[in-house]
Length: 301
Ligand SMILES: NC(=O)c1ccc[n+]([C@@H]2O[C@H](COP(=O)([O-])OP(=O)(O)OC[C@H]3O[C@@H](n4cnc5c(N)ncnc54)[C@H](OP(=O)(O)O)[C@@H]3O)[C@@H](O)[C@H]2O)c1
Image (cartoon, rainbow, N blue to C red; front, side):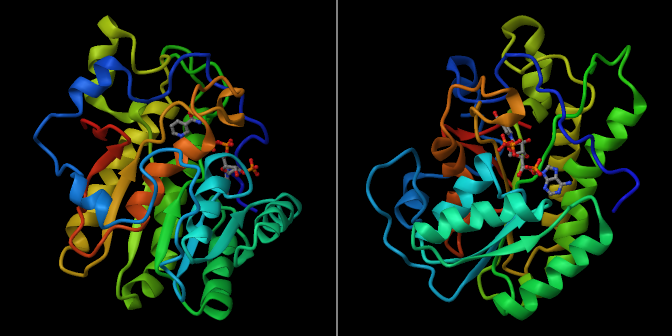
């Protein structure tokens, strides 16, 4: 167990949108500075763009995905969506009992899933998870770095405890790097590897800059919001290093989703929140890399 293990139940951030396509955000995503997922991407991609009632056609049989923090919330729904598309899904969970419950739920839906005990803040746990995926999954094609925490309050920068910053970064940033690097040898062997980081629109510096006037970038939060900015910045370094490997690496904002993270104050369902991560996890080979996306399109950096 890592000495910097996060607090068990981080207090939810105040009841204001974390990210999500509001009128202001929607206008801003048309900024032409990043690759835009066009209709052709959606057409060649089997992940739902939005909540859907139709049963997706399994098209990814024989491929393995790992979703971190998949025992509940958006991660559970991403695991369900990828399973429905035919993936064998490793259900990452730091608590074995909570993970086993999630696995049983997904198996009851007829999905091919298995438990991957995984605390992204713990080196040994991540290494053991990689071993398990190699043995049980036969490798890895898709990694969804979904696990995340908000950290405890207060988070106003003038009063935030530095331990809160350390704890949040340990999971939201270092945890992603730790997990990604442990899984990369398997991803490099895949013929169509995808890495998806579940980020947040509150990590957008453009939205944070505008927040003083439009209030659309969530509460003042010196730990959580910058952790997602850092995550996006690190992602771009991965994109540069992995250029030419065929591994597509993208960030997703799920929108403001009702989960434990925000005391279920979000206005979107977990199915809606999972849609963009699933879409990015199933991009065609000529899909974008190094982008930051939400349902409405590109999120500005
Ligand atoms: N909900 C939103 O409105 C929203 C908006 C933007 C971005 N996001 C992002 O979406 C992702 C999922 O959040 P959520 O809303 O679904 O929250 P959630 O319901 O609280 O789920 C978070 C998941 O992460 C797991 N987790 C936390 N720390 C971990 C660690 N060290 N190792 C492994 N797993 C760990 C949790 O496990 P336990 O059950 O053991 O705690 C849980 O499974 C996060 O990255 C979050 O920042 C959410």
